[in-house]
Amino acid sequence: MGVFKIEANNLCWIDSSIDNPDDLCLHGNVIVKIGDEIYRYNATVSATALYLLKSLTEDHIIYDDIQMLPCCGFSIISNDDLTNVDIVGCNDGIDWSILHENDYVKIVTEKNNEIIVSIDEYRYEVYKFVDEIELYYNKCKPKNLPYDEVDKNGYIAFWNEWNRRRNRNLQKENGFR
Image (cartoon, rainbow, N blue to C red; front, side):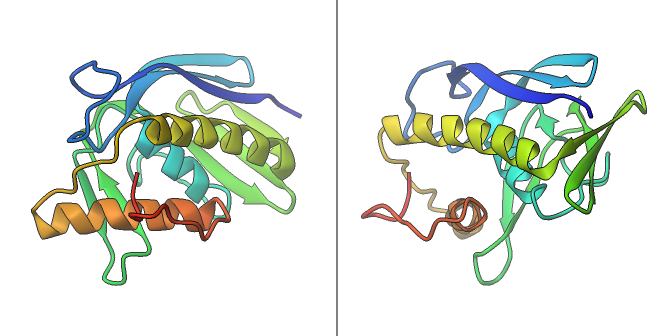
């Protein structure tokens, strides 16, 4: 059995402020331990959190989608019913594969090292990370939704998918963070 740990610190918005109602994507320093490999990267942690949630039920194949630790996530593209998103960013970032095998998750790094962890251990780490990111959003002022319909729908769908995958059907009074 391997070790998977992920944590974030120095959370901020793109302008390095602790609160920015116009910035929809949270950034921070991420430290990931996958077996004996340790990665440190300044990532778009909101995208990381959502893609970690996706990885609880779906395989993530390295380089097929946005990285697990993306440099940026400049576009959030919603599906038609605002339930799922794809996040598009640049080519910079750190990625790994996440493959489901019964009650286990196999993680394969860019160096082709593999570890296997129980789905329960993996879920625990994912939820711990996701909840930390969500707490930061909740401590900030509500976001100003973009006027552009595509951007607005992307942000709405982002939180719809987040809450569904985090097994919540909650919405704040205004429906957004």
